[in-house]
Length: 251
Image 1 (cartoon, rainbow, N blue to C red):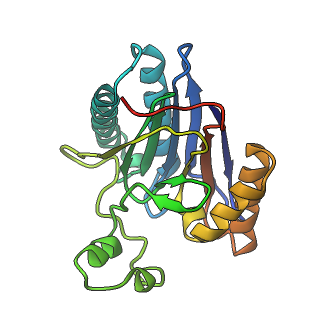
Image 2: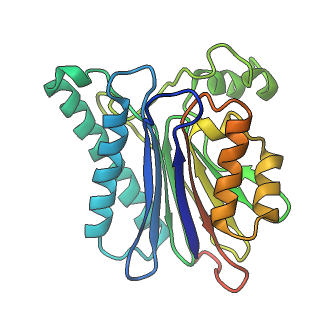
């Protein structure tokens, strides 16, 4: 299992409010995280950094996770705890009132990948033939798409496409979405903030991953492509690859 994390401020923003990273355990499992601080909120960078600091600390202290059900429970509980921590912090610090962040996290083992998300940072499963989005955006326009009121094509240009329905830092339970897929040879998992997904198409993602000779070059090409198309937002991604001689079926 190979992995890389990369973040770029973009061409317009003065501050990078995205955070993330890749954290490996001695048993071979890894946790990849991307958090996008809310651009329209104060202290979005504080929210995303706190999120990554908390989840990485809890991951280092967590026992070995061998089953998908354990991964889903750990991610759900940890994200709920992070949400409570962010909410409490913003209540105690006036300069951080209203701060928020998205999160997409993938807990990866040799047998399965469990992805959790809140907000519109995305997780993709990429094979030799196709790109499949394995998360659903917690956004106003995606709710319209799901209800059949607008098409996916309309959503790409909708004036409220950046309005989120859920984000970390909210009051009460956040109920992150969870999905587990098998870890197969040749699979690639891509996590990213909307600075990438709003600019780079599925076909461009697939081409970059198929043509690149290393994950480092893949990450660089994807970020360069988003910047070439305007780079109005911060751009952050994590890529996890299962080479042809690794992986296995979900048990």
